Length: 207
Image 1 (cartoon, rainbow, N blue to C red):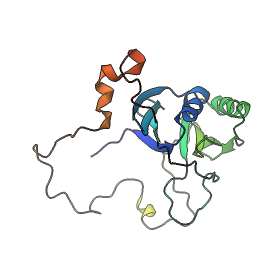
Image 2: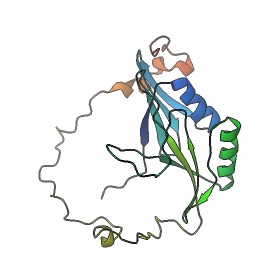
Image 3: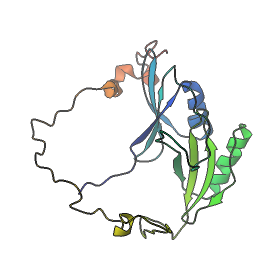
Image 4: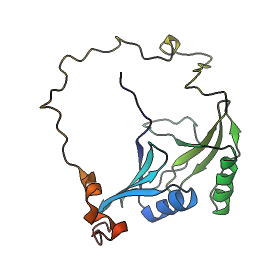
């Protein structure tokens, strides 16, 4: 059975990478650990945890989205509502709130959601962010709960994946099929491209 480690990275978009770095690295404290780029394009990664990153593409023509309160229903085409970042200590929620308000960013009050306590804010790109602290003894991964007053029939089947819902694999990939093709990120393995150790990235990533 496939086992997932978490969200490897969430890829978002900005037209202002400097402002994005100032917010995510310098205000929130996430390390900037990877960067790819060429004229008109950047792709930067911020370390969120042992297995997770928040990543941003910089596209010169993109505009910040209009702020929409977290979880408020929307109409029409829609994919992404907000990202929730877990914090280790409850006190970190107020530390983040203080930092945000000192930097003139809006921050909500801390809200009790039963299994988590949450703080809400927006980044300079209009990305809706939630900061969440796990309430001890209420880990849904240990004790799943379905508290929907009118759950759909599929939800009532329980938390575990159900076999037989989809066609089985009839033609698995062969050894010859398992080819990994080169992508933009190959530059990460080239020490000569690492600007932090005197590499040769000068001028290549200007947008």
